[in-house]
Image 1 (cartoon, rainbow, N blue to C red):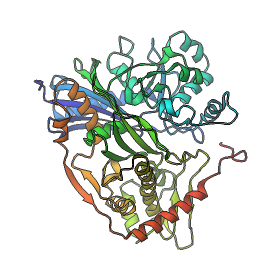
Image 2 (spheres, helix red, strand yellow):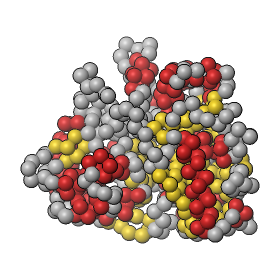
Image 3 (tube, one colour):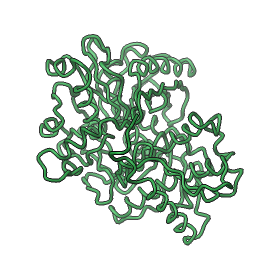
Length: 510
């Protein structure tokens, strides 16, 4: 083990940026957190100010160091984890983004997706690159966001072709700035983030020329693809001299933090959206049931590990919507007590298809609906229906995972902000019919990034040591009959049907 005693994780999520310092036992000893401004220029558009994200990153690192009463000299390594598909293009000479970061939830690029899915074909095929990338053609992923910027922001295409611009998901943006920016910053991403661009060949873990051509993206824009755990560069202030040695996309980081290192292990993260990841080991497993195939992790020169993923667009952000758009609650934490004030949903079901439906349905034409409304239904029922929607959507992706793998999950490890909601966790166990388990350290995303960074510098010896650090804090077991469970799920599916086929030629996005 190195002489220094701690590892720093930078965790950029959709709604905030955090820095957390962990000790060798995986305990949190210092933290800083700042919210990210959410920018909605038009319906379906979601943006972040990338400069704000970088400024906040510096601030939260300083806050975490101050809280722990540490300096850079006490830090052995830095790990980065990030909202994955969110895309930034910036000027290499100035470090200034040419446009706001386009967030993974953004749906403005549907026309580009439609064009790519139809090019040279008699019929559109959103799965035309799925064998190569593990992904369907969807606005979710980075490629169409890059293409939009090159088409819509004046001068960017010429500058990109001249090698003046750089693209990155947020990990690359933070790493570039953290290692010096315009004064020698390294332009690198890891395999997990690269696998979410629609531009990487899953088998080779390299950028693919046919995909770059399909989206008309110059190769010079792209970062070098590296493993998830190795020394990429040395940080400048406020952590000058510390190696940056771990990068994992947020869902892969959470899987790593849950010690789900082996084939057959899985976790479910409750964040802005929900993401279930099932580790398939060194096998590339292509889903037949609406899941994504993605990279789970790659440690240095060791073989790449792959995973199946069920991505749900709107879960935690639904609670934000209840707070910010409807004013039903004044803080996210209030949703549980409000929902507990009624015994059930009163017959109301909420399908939060604000960005269409992601896995396993992949229906960009869907939009949010609340069905089953009567005069009896009040805001408490709506709050309860919102929480239940999170659990029902998770049931959909778990069913798809079971079908793809032929190995029904016996339990689900959970993490993310919403796992503090006891009502949701119990309902989740009820709907799934299997135990739901919460770990002692709930910040598994940041912890996973710390683990990847620490492994690269010898702070931890291997994944066996990390597995030994995982501890169960609480579990919820199903409390309803299978007949009740299936009835609830049948009604949920009826509600989902009401959300489909909404976006068509008559539906104009303002």
